[in-house]
Length: 483
Image (cartoon, rainbow, N blue to C red):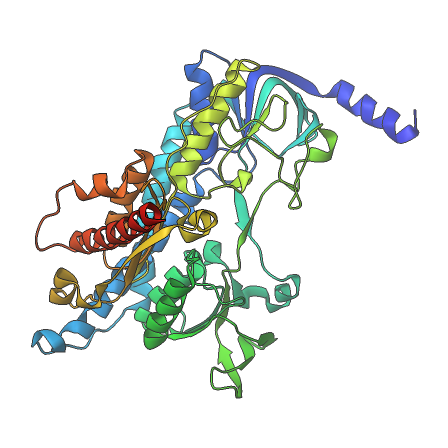
């Protein structure tokens, strides 16, 4: 035994040890769900949190972003006034007041979460950073050991961006910084037209911030069908600058960021911004857990390989849930994963599969985006039948002057079962729910068309897309019979 090993052994011997049935690392949405599931199973559970309490959704994600989008959409509404025969009035955005409301309401949402945590027994909570010693032992801040029959990793995720951008200092912001701004900036260069970049970029633009959005690879949010990607790109470009295949370099100059980029017309441009907003992705918070001390097999990103129906990592008593799993980083999915992981950690080794719902993702831009059942990317291997509608001439959408968008529904060419959908258009958040329910119920296109559709509503556009799919399915069936 080396001297270092002897010293480590001596230090461990002096540490306080805690025994529990289930240890949950992380007190966000997934962690709280896992803790409650373990307690409901009649087991002892310990909730370990190394940072601030309050979920990603409440503190820096879903809720504060919608608080920013709401006034942005309200300010933008006057753009439709002239077409309705009304005179538009000037809207003056109070940059400080907007952010005051965002922070006030955000803090209110966070309080709901922290109140729930405060109500938990003190004996069930532990503050500190946990690392693995082995599959059943955690070290917390070098001051105590936690021995658990089952462990749930629910450590969430964090923004990622090029390391070189750290040189931008306080001129670099992520979504976790935006909601701490005292007032809206004059300008921002947004990098990453994914869900976060599109939502925040459009909202800032509508609130009077000079915005340009840069991306790489040509993608738009979670869309995977080339036709919808191209359509969405054209629509967004009509409102604000968007280059999804940008070549850009950034550098700090005083209190500004200088962005040099190849413009859409091919020319080289240099522009100054108050901030660079990095929306270039998020990574699971697993790199500081010392997972190398476990028996787990890790993927290329360092995330344990796991079964998404049980959340079990390999054959171990370790489970993963929420953004840390890098599976479906959405609040409702995190809650489901947490419940499954916590229940199975409590009942290990007699684990069982839990309910995984039909995939549903919504982007709260205008027009909105929704992906159901994994969208085109998931349906593509099955060579699906595609039913389609453009909302440009859809009745209710035209009435409201919200007639931009496209919907595609995907169906199995043999069985006619509904496989999923992608939509860019009005009220996608609501239509997406109907489609997700249909996917989870394994309905066919014919069965979906038996459902009621009121008139005149945007959902009639969904019926048109379903009818298009049914017509194409009938043609395929006729051709097969003829063959």
